[in-house]
Image (tube, rainbow, N blue to C red; front, top):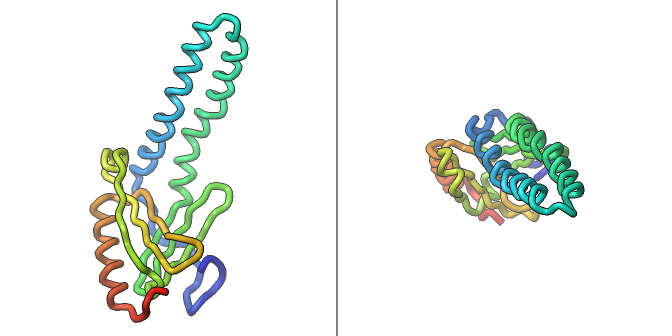
Length: 168
């Protein structure tokens, strides 16, 4: 369910923000991509005399677009990303320019997983993925404190086991 009211569930703003450390996690991801590119362009600009002007323009363009994007997008994502779990459903809101609001009724949940990549582990974070019987795909809740993610998985497991239906 992605729009309107379905089976008594109303599309509404989820209550909880993700963990504040998610901003650092996202900034680090951007830095790991952007810094090597800027360094490579800087080194090439200084070493290749015939292409110096073109490489300097490329370096300036990447820096002018990449650095503000790398700083501001994590702040915006932190502002937009929301989640909530009730006895009836999982609610999420994500997005950049186009925001996506999702409701996953407990009766439609098939699996609940936790993912922790190397950077998430470094920052003590985890992503919870709720797989549903939906053509839209899984509902994800990124940037949760690792302990909170474990609580969410336990809560969802208990609630879905107590909810009638076959999740299809």
